[in-house]
Image (cartoon, rainbow, N blue to C red; front, side, top):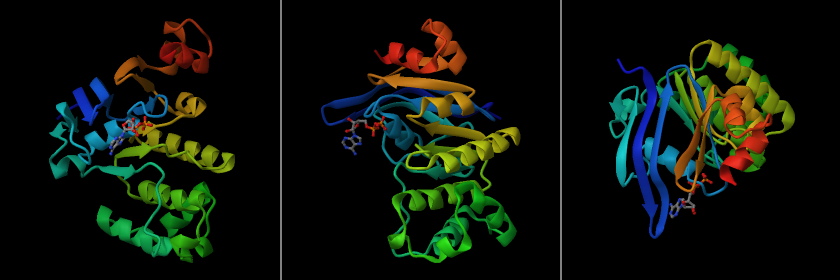
Length: 238
Ligand code: ADP
């Protein structure tokens, strides 16, 4: 059995003339909380899409729990939240959650749903509205709920905190830390360095198509000679 949840070796990816990834290596352990940070356009989403086989890497090897990423069973243990997520506009929120539960092969008990709703500050009434009537932030919350209710041992989330108000961000972080205590694994991208500092065992700073730093936020501060993670990040990408 592989010790790693995610293994990424020498991944290159080009879109036309744009060489986005230039040999990315990452190894994420089971039970680890790992954040991917980098400027807009650094290739964070592209790397996640390559991992999930939505985009084909030009070179390199990717695996999940020791299984090559192109095999559907490699994805059997994960839940994914895409960037800027919006569920299909014609579904009601509760229809969407039922649909996702079916795809995940689970059923969400009313009690389980009731325990998750306060995390994203939603109630049953909001779930009855069609997605087209929901704000962008509320639609994003439905995607988060689907991920959280999946019970999967690996969560891959592309900017999960974007568009969330501070209360929901704080509650979501608390909940994610509970999942960490249960041994789940989180691989997420974020622009919010404070969130990365709060949640992550380790972060990777992706810049110029390469990983410029991998380690804990505290190690990053030490490596770049500052006590402040934001300053360390700026020095790394500067
Ligand atoms: P990040 O998530 O770090 O903001 P992305 O992975 O979204 O970065 O984008 C990295 C680069 O790849 C950007 O220059 C973006 O314009 C380009 N890119 C992303 N997806 C595509 C695509 N489907 N076709 C062409 N270029 C793309």
